[in-house]
Length: 208
Image 1 (tube, rainbow, N blue to C red):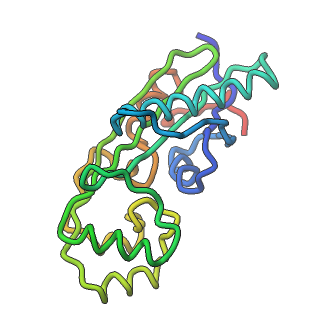
Image 2 (image 1 turned 90 degrees about the vertical axis):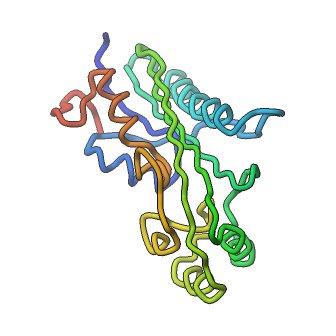
């Protein structure tokens, strides 16, 4: 196996960048050229897998076209949020966020988060995390106050679980709490170890 010299996160999400920073490994970021249009009759799990892998491959292709003489590992991730069999996006504004949280009150929302790694000399790895978020019964006053404080209008589901949003829930059922924020670090760490990139060792060959 060739030695990886660069790890690239194929995402411009500040949330994913902050999460990957937890692993204390040098990495760079890039914006993958990926069409995220859902395909007809595609399940959420299938869509997340397809897009996670597509982002990783798109990033690798960009890097190889610029410098094919390096050994890369590219990380792709995608997340989708489902409620009552309907895909939910980022609210974008206050009114939409209010409607989302009102509809979630006393119910559960499911998040599917995928992570894929691939390299020019590495095999493809992929994992999926499924997270169920159970909301408390929320009053209009609680919803209004929460949104005023946190303004999570760029977050799917209209909340930030890593911050004040935790007050909205009765429970979170998941194998990895990082997945809900946007990147399953337990799965990613396993994929890195498969490729001899253990975050708990000194990765001196990697370049910032």
